[in-house]
Length: 330
Image 1 (tube, rainbow, N blue to C red):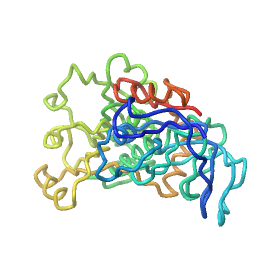
Image 2: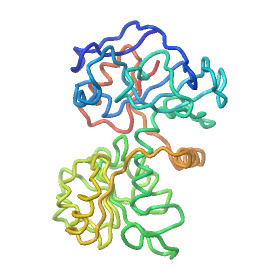
Image 3: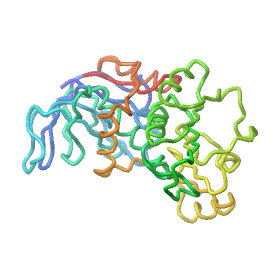
Image 4: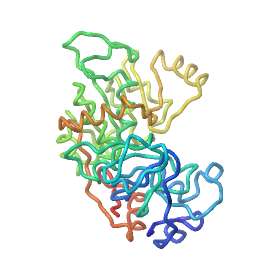
C-alpha cells in the first residue's frame, strides 16, 4: 500500500511517500480503505520527535490518528460493522506505528463509528481529536444544552441568564468547533482571532471577536463565566483576571495533577482549572453526531492535500495561521 511515513524523527526530510506492506484485520479489528485523514498538532510533534520517550525508536511510523473511509474487511469477532460501510474514527499514534496516512488501516472496532448521513469523508475525519475536546471543554465549564452556569460549573434552570464564554484561537482546529458548540448550547461566545478571520468567527456563531494581537485581555477588565483556551498558550497564573467569581478555565494542554489543581484553584479564589481532554464515551460521539445532523456543527476545511503531498500539509500545520482543519485525502 501507499503511505506517508517516517524513517526517523525529524521534519519533512525524515519522512517519505512510498510503499509499505498491507495491514490485515486482526481479531476484533476493522480494515478500512482510508479516504481522508485529519492532521492534528500531535502528528507533527510526534514526527519531530517531541514524544520519543513515549513513542520509542521503532520505524517506519505512519502518522494520522483521525480518519474516515470504507470497511474493506472485518477480523474475527467483529459484529458491529460489515464490508462497504462508511466509517470514521480515531486511534492514538503514541503507541501505535500504524497510523491513518495510508491506503489501508487496521483499527479496533470500538474505535470506529458509522459516518452520519450527509457527511463527507473529510468532514468526518476532522471531528475526533478536535471536536471532542471542544465538546468536553464546554461540558467541564458547565455549558450544556438547556442549562446555565451559576458558579464553578454548577448548573441551574433559570432561563434568562446568558453564559459568557471566551474561546481563544476561535478559528483554529479546536476553537472553531468550540464556538459552534457554545452557540448551540445558548452561550454568548467571544472569540479571539485575527481581523482577517473575524468574519468567519461571527459566521460560526461568535457574538464578538477580539484581535488577539491588538488587545491585552489580561488588562482589559473583561470577565467571563468560562474561558476555553483552545490554543493552550495562556499564562495560567493570569487566568483569574478573566474569570468571574466561581468561573472555570479549560485548556487543550493543561492537565494538572489533582493536588496542583486544588492548590491553584485556592489561589485563584475558587475559580476552576481543568483539562479539555479527548473523552470519547459513546454519549460524546452521539452528541457530536446530533449537532452535525441538525446543522449546528460543521467542520471548516479550507486546506486539502493528496497523500503524495502530505509533507506540504505537515509544513502548513507547523507554520500555523490556517483556519479550521487540514485534511489529507487518500
